[in-house]
Structure formats: structure tokens, C-alpha cells
Length: 134
Image (cartoon, rainbow, N blue to C red):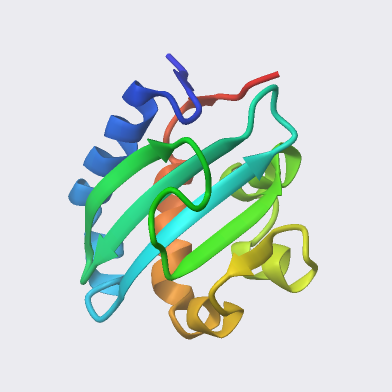
């Protein structure tokens, strides 16, 4: 059964899936970053905070705004682009390079330098059966 994107159950599922992922743990073992995903184009803007440390996800939380929590990287883009990335129809790095997703805080170089960990994050989240907002 699909879980509503960015809802409480989905956030819990993301954290649990990351905790179980050997690939994410291995790819992220030297990576520490706080990310905010800002999703535009939905009925209401959606902002999701990730606290990622050395192969673990310490926190996944829904925010009221992209600036509510300090983060190293903020990625912003329309719902359609996030859907394509999380359905694995569009690679995260390609989405950033083509500006379908924009780095609005921080530097894209930090993502590119940790591309294996970032892709492992996407792979795990893409495995969650997600119901998308209209």
C-alpha cells in the first residue's frame, strides 16, 4: 500500500529504510550533511529535513519552510522533478546539472563530491511505495 509523500508515516518509512540499508550505510560512511528538500508545485509547499551522518540518518522531519532548520544543502524543485528523481526516471546529479532541481543554499560541489552517498539516499527512498500529491 502506498504511503503519502512527506506524511508522518512516509517520514518514518524513509528513516527505517535508511537504517536497514547496507548500501546507504557503506556509501555514506564518510559523509555528514544536513539537507532540506523543498518541493514546489504541490497544493502547499513541502519541505523535508534530513540529518545524515556517517551512513546513518539521524532525523527526517517535515518543516514549515526551507529555512526553519539550518542545513548544509537545500535542493528546491517542482513536484514533477522530485517524482521523476524518486521514480528513478531522472538521476539526481542530472537533475541538479540541468537545473530541474536547484541548489538554493549550499554548494552543488558538496553533493557532487558525495554523489555515491547521495545516490544511495535516493535509491533507498525510491524503494518506498509512495502516493504523490495531486
